[in-house]
Image 1 (tube, rainbow, N blue to C red):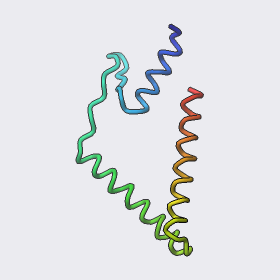
Image 2: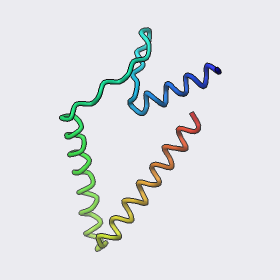
Image 3: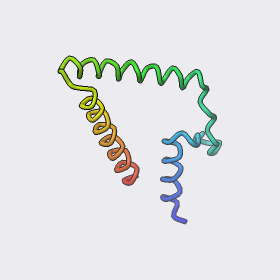
Length: 88
C-alpha cells in the first residue's frame, strides 16, 4: 500500500476526531468527548445561530426562508469540506 495513502487516511481519521496522532508515540483511538464539553459546544453554537436568526428576522425573513438559508449554507459547507477531503 502506498505510504501517502496511509498517511492521508490517518490525517482524515484525525480530522474527524476518530484517532489521535501522538508524534513519536503512534496513533491511538481518540477518547470520547465528555457530555459536559459537548453540551457547552452545542450551547455556543446555539448562541451563534440565534444571533444570525435574529438578524434574519430583522430583515423580515420568514421561518421557511431562514430554514432555507440555513440548509443552503450547511450544504455549501459540507460540499466544501468533502472537496477538501478529496484533495488531501
